Image (cartoon, rainbow, N blue to C red; front, side):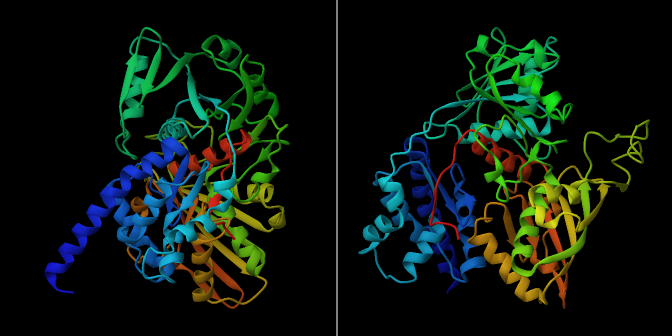
Length: 479
């Protein structure tokens, strides 16, 4: 290709991506169809992000899938009478164009591939959501729910509950949602209604309720009924404490964004979400680390068998540590988080067993808190039932990341230049670093990156959907 043609090719990609973008929005807001590109959500994506998402396809398919190849499919989708679903346009385009040279058979191909969506009469009832606590995870959940809001998405963020209520508090809450030092500016408009104590975000009216305990709240006075209350405070971790929410008028179910204690089900979406029953009223979404490692461990165990292993977590500092040296009830956590690597404990390895009982008693774990604000890494040192090479293991995990029931949880990278800041904003529970994989005989070491804030929040939203009966078919079907 001549130097001039590189620029021409880029401009053509831009033009096609600019045509694709508004159609994706129409599909989502008018039909409830969420379009993916090799597992990556592209609704509301910028033109450049769309082009980059197309280029990810080479990693999995070995061939280029350009916007010129997906545009005809997207245009056809917009003309089809589809029910709410998720459609991976990258995989469909790859499947079509590898066997065809023109669009003559595209209508028949899509009609066959999406037959179940065309015949479905699925309708989803609107369900109210309350965020109890508005810290790091609470604000990211708000961003995700607002991003998804539309006629085709039934979960409605109706309120947040926080302590306080002093003058200026409402504007401060809005400002923290608007600007984030790690995740950047909020993509949209945020205004404050001081008189009614509410925040309006991209047209979504969110009531701010000031309360010092669940007992102080009556959600029905705000028009909220049968709501899912997402507890982001971590104050209560057992059924007795969390059941306080269920006593509030208007509350129906509770989801904890921390590991639950006692008999509370700890759910890692993609692994054991089917354990959530319609009668369950209190569920835990486990921890960020448990969500990061369990899908990968399940994939490895299903294929090669895990005899035992050790999980070492290199974790960004969190709010429960001190900025500078000061008293802390926890061992070592009183030392400055911004100046030290801090050796501490983690229950993530044991917690894996709650979501994946086959690994009960087989794993140990520890953690090192490090002076970075976000993105962590789990190093899984595993002994297996069978021999495996690094190349074979990487090929398997790469395929799991593209086309399996765990593709929404596992991502894969082969880059030899990737560092922690590159993972900020990842929507996957964990990202396998294939370039770092070590395997010899029946032993392997896997390095798993994860955005312990945003990636975990995406997993929490999946659990919210499962609890409230909001599930969509994905096309093409995952194996």
